[in-house]
Length: 454
Image (cartoon, rainbow, N blue to C red; front, side):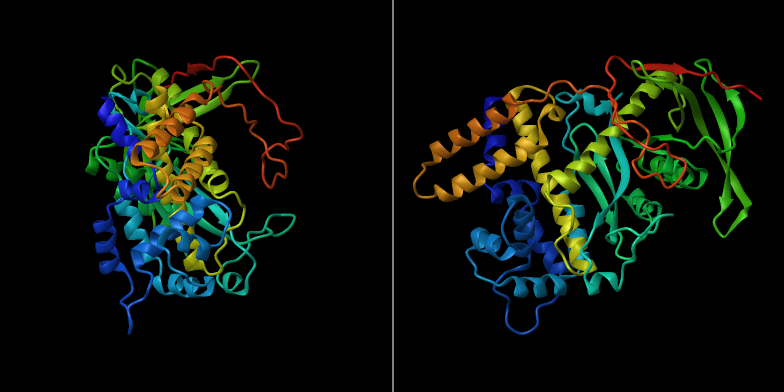
């Protein structure tokens, strides 16, 4: 066990080792050769794989230009304008292929039981948007969203992704180059589902059209889903189960003619309500393809759905904590997509480091602070780089072990129940207006509401 832990520690000593643990150099080179642009004329000084790793390093390194970080990582001196041209020529396809090859689940059932439910790996599905600068190149292709009061300050590049809820490790991502909707981008992720996953998703996906596609994808891959459903979706109750849930039939509309139905799907529906301490009850309606109410009681699934909130926290880590800035730095849609994909790779690198720190501190991965991991791992990389030729291999290993121990020692306390009020500061629809933050403490209550057979 000690040798295994030491091997994990070594894998995060430098950025090159951490990125190599994510994706082997030979695989990266092969993907670039197959998917990347074909060189014309003289071979470029900076190879494609070096460009990819340098962009990920640039996002993780914090302050500094891409040119400076390329020099620190590879020793090559290139201007930012030359690197911008290389990135523009590279396109997005090769980055998507690299991300797809690099991302993988990290949790192990025996070591991280909180990341699983009855042996199924808990996966979150969600989407978000990244703000970009108001440059002519970007505004020529992207439009700003408009509310009833005014237009947004910045145009957005949308993204949908899958995340392992027990470790916050990204598993798949789709970026919209033409401002596609979260709905459309999430459809692209269904082909990347894997066997043994349990997908949790919010109300955006809780309609018959998407659940139909999700049901097909999960049945094909041997996975399952648990989705929150909108209250106004009509169903036909076919059988009420012993725990108060029911098997229901849901009509699926024809995508070419919404007024015509093309069939129906069967799902298990769970209706319940949730209350936090000193709070009011909130109604929750879920659909799932876990049919057996004895193995998977409605009360248990109602409480399990609360773990979907982890992907909201992971999205904040990806958009704000990792990058430290609100706006993407890129000036074209393609390079903005590259930046998002590189940030996802950077988050995957840090997810590995969090698991190493969790093993060192003997706590769960989600108890490891994302911010502290980023800060201390980044400092470790700089110190090891500056100590090259000064520090011995034994000293470098001891320094890395000490860093992981420090991160593990600063583990966060057990997380309290979610306390964010269901309100917004500038409402544009039916949401109540948020005037002051409120916090709730104490256990969460879950109550299943029996479904009527009528």
